[in-house]
Image (cartoon, rainbow, N blue to C red; front, side, top):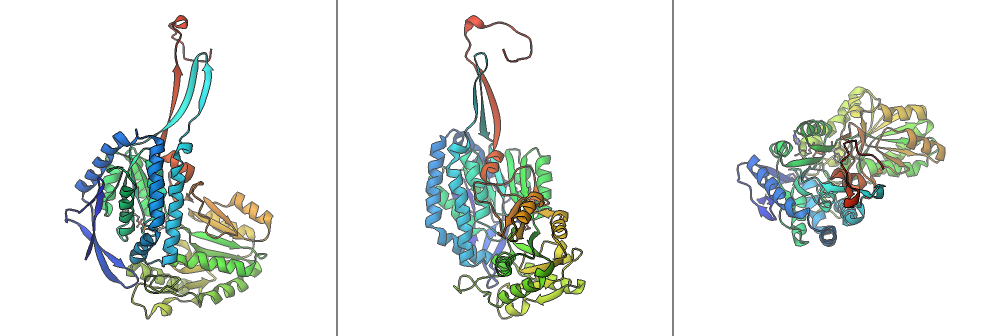
Length: 496
Ligand code: NAD
């Protein structure tokens, strides 16, 4: 049985063996490994290593930090297939999707390589007589990242490249469900020349997370996961005096106006709802069909579902959709087909028969029509391949659904009407809006983040807001006095 360890102080570090958990291949249902679960003492060892590294890392010149990140970027690029295979083996997403995840992670490393430009401050000469003022942004110290199962390589890359580029050191606690890909990237960081202790990884569960939140030497926490945990992490972390950004779950709407190109909208809805088996925080889970578009749109979506090939991404090169992460999660997701039917939705397609002959935790694409806002299949985040279609009479009703929803990660509109699209961009209550783009994940030089229950904290993740989160501002007021002009003055400093 493959035993998956921590990465502390620049080396693979076996756990004490006190606590561990199983790792599965969701496409077969077979256990493939066992992952160490960190104890409080192991988390403390990782934080101590990061704290010691911070003392010298913050003094390493910015250009040298970039150089290491450039080398890391090349190594990730060279090993993208290896990383993708690890992702597929433990998460289940098909290889092409896993390779896409690595590409989006790479973008964030590339962004961090430009840290010299990003850390530039401002300077005012002669703010007062003989006085110059300048602003700088300095690292926070040891920061922690806690990441979800659905993007085991990319979401950590939203965090640590920027964090270390800014001069912080980092402790990552990835999901215990698919721990091998993030661990492999630690080896690549070492190969790139990153000194020991600058990035550490502790495997584990709530025990490790709680210790990171309480640890007095951890200055900030970045979290991505479900909304209840995000809220708790934000409240506990800020209660302990830490800076926290905690990204939560989602219910992403795709509004289709009557003038939209139905075939294009159906392609987009199917890609965004069923890609990665719906286990994306930016997946479309609710299509809002406005007026006369509903009937042809539902027919066009349904027609595409026959052609989606589900299967084991490691064994079947043509598979387009993999399994769900656990048997329990698959059953929970499938339960929404039944609850939708019981609540009065029309089950256009039940994906269970498609998966009946497969060993792993599969569920075929499923489609519910005539869903209404009171139904559990609409109210809850399903996080699986069950797409709901809500039919509304007009644009205002459609936007109200987006704006009344407790989540606000992504929202998209499909239309040929530039005015309607512009209005939607102005009034949609979500942090990321797509116009004829179903999954509007920003490129790395913008920042990622939702509104409402999709994000707790002030700062979005990666991009410029990531640099802001991982640094604190300082303003230096300096004077190189001419002894001839020196005098005592008890008044409040002001311009002279
Ligand atoms: P999760 O909340 O169960 O776990 C996330 C992380 O928190 C993991 O590392 C896990 O070990 C840890 N954790 C779980 N329960 C905990 C607890 N009680 N106390 C402390 N730590 C705990 O989420 P998941 O199932 O891994 O990921 C899926 C969820 O993440 C979905 O809700 C999805 O929408 C969300 N997500 C959001 C974004 C975003 O950017 N907003 C991105 C990806 C995933």
